[in-house]
Image (cartoon, rainbow, N blue to C red; front, side, top):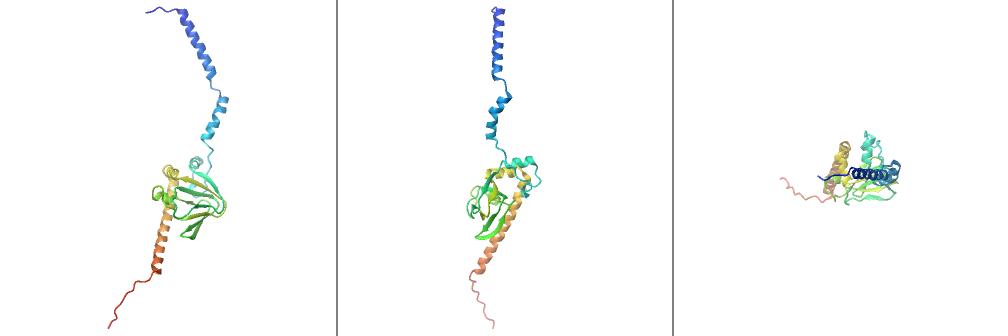
Length: 206
């Protein structure tokens, strides 16, 4: 074993301690400096959520924390009068909730309904299949309107993570499905009545 010089060992240890102290002072955590440096980055990555209104039927009974989580899944869009949110037969890839204003709904060229605050649409074609499902009706903005829009990915995240909201969305979608089925049956019946009847020859009785 090699002999060691106690004096040299002490000097090395003292030098290590001095270097460690300087490093600590240079890199010690400064709350004020950290706040100035980090907060802008955090603000860019985590924008302030748009708070959804719990008075809307779709979100009734939800606590503030749940509403804030849901808010992050929607894009809030302001629309001017006369704009269109989609025409019947176009592909659809988003779910929409009316937060304020009015939207006119047209089916087969006939005015059907007015969707106002709390109304939702777009769920049925998304639930029926993959991307590219067609829009069942046309939607025109009747006055300045604000809507919340979730794309296909966020829509299914809502269904998966928020069961109560998902149940409400599915219930409305099923009601719309039943209405469209009845509408299609009525159109088919009207087409039959308008068509030329098939001639039936009944032999005269003697």
